Image (tube, rainbow, N blue to C red):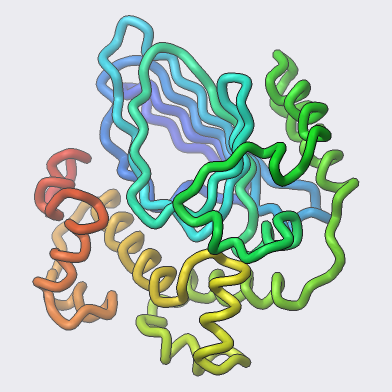
Amino acid sequence: MIGKTRQPSAQVQELYDPEVGPARGMFRRPLPAGKLRHVRRKTAHDLAPWIAHYWMIRWDLRGCAPHVAESLPHPNIHMIFEDRVTVVCGVQTKKFSRLLQGESRVFGIKFQAGGFRPFYRASVSGLADRIVPAKEIFGNAVGVLEAAVFSSRPDNEKIAACNNFFLQRIPNADPSVTLARQLVALILADPEIKSVDELVRRSPLGKRSLQRLFNEYVGASPKWVIRRYRLMELVEKFNSGGKLDWPQLALELGYFDQAHLINDFKAVVGHAPTKYQKLVGKRA
């Protein structure tokens, strides 16, 4: 793995394959003590249309105060292995918040936007803001995968086990999976897409068909995805520091004015932007 960032004073380590890149939308509140390690690894090439990457988080806060980890979830579905329990987590429309304490680890599979639909065989909007046992979707066969992931094997072997599990279950080709993935990626990459109408102009689908595609394959509406990614841009600007031009920023992110941007940020994040900046140690 080439990509690497490290914060020795905070004892936080983030490692990632270059193809995957660093995490976005994280509320990077400083860790006062203890250790935290976040790893993001690529999937097998043949699984890339359905699985975005694997991720592993480990922390050791024994003897330290608990730490709150928060982020703005992406429009993706995850399969999560923790404490001998495996679940599928649908698209989370609210802020993710988790209290880290003691010592533990989590292994996750992040599916591509639209990529979980062939495994679920139903509209993934039904999984929104829900957590369901993985066996309800993959059956008892998931026990073989659990045996590998919950073992003391090196991460590479756990990833190989996941690759083998899903390579045996590659779905039939579905153009809608590809289109959903491409459109979500376009929203992320192009900050000029600030409305559903603008996305329709970039899409081969009409507005209603586009909304049906997102409902069936992504699990969130196009409007939600656009707004979520624009708010993530704001979070990344906060994380990088520097003075912000609020009126101009509101226009760039597709808001009517500064007040609407601040209110939306507060509604989703739970803090006003100024308070968030203090929490992460940045100044506007």
